[in-house]
Image (cartoon, rainbow, N blue to C red; front, side):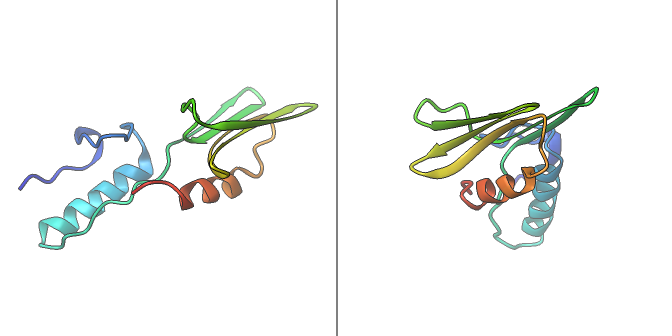
Length: 113
């Protein structure tokens, strides 16, 4: 058996460098080393950035051609929400990102195991 976790481990569909996924991989690897058969449940990828006073937040899947996209633009912000069969799969928020955790929870609820 091989047990690995963190940036040294390859997990299909998971970008390395995700803090929360690295923690979860370590927890699951440790649990499986002692004999448990626990599958990993990964979190959707997310990116947060702050350039000067401009904030950016992206999460989930928004690179799929089958997704529907809604765009909401206000004075100093832009919001793109991505859906697959009516279910939120990704978001890109520019400017006002105050409700990012609400979107993340909805995206995470449907994220594949």
